[in-house]
Amino acid sequence: MRVLVACEFSGIVSTAFRNLGHSVISCDLIESEVYGEHYKGSVEDILYKGYDLMIGHPPCTYLSYAGNKYFNVEMYGEMAERRELEKQKALEFFKLLWEAPIKHICLENPKGYAMRMIKQSQIINPFYFGDSERKGIYLWLKNLPPLYHSRSNTLFEKQSHVLPPEPVYTGKKKRYRTEALNGKSEDAKKERSRFFKGIAEAMALQWSEHIQSI
Image 1: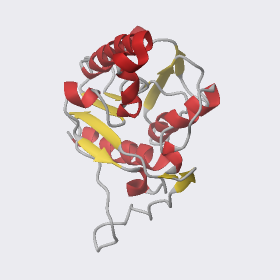
Image 2 (image 1 turned 60 degrees about the horizontal axis):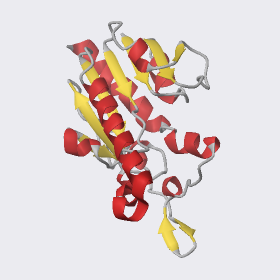
Image 3 (image 1 turned 180 degrees about the vertical axis):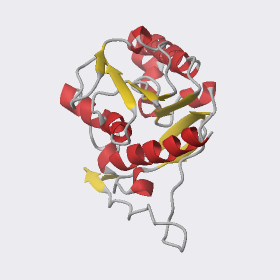
């Protein structure tokens, strides 16, 4: 199966699919952190090369509701107007990926403006799949089933959930580690955008089986 992982530098999703024997190319504006086929540049350059599956991580800087207040023109003036323009570009990019000529597509983002354009298919958390982190991850799925996860062991299923993390405190505000990764440095931005190994492995295993069974 030919797999495109768009907007990924960490190699977390790419590696999960490569480990199952698939032909995978990742793409980002920066180099990949892992060995494997990777295109450094715009995903638009390689989007139309005949893939079976795409996993896309569109940048959420201007799509997430986390920065909602900065769109207030009365408070932030020209900065808010510039952000609105960037948001529209981000939505256009999201739509470009969603409408790519690839049969099976998954896009992921946090809760944000993309939901208003296209309704999400599933909402998951990393601790559903073995990573003790809490972060609402919204999935948009095209010709793919929702990811399966299990709260407990049964005769037919193995538990995938782990205990959710304890909160951390920034000042007096209760937050979770993934919410507390503040900062404008490149290292902080990269850490916030890093995906979760358990979810990546679930994607690779479950969707490989689904696509190959069709």
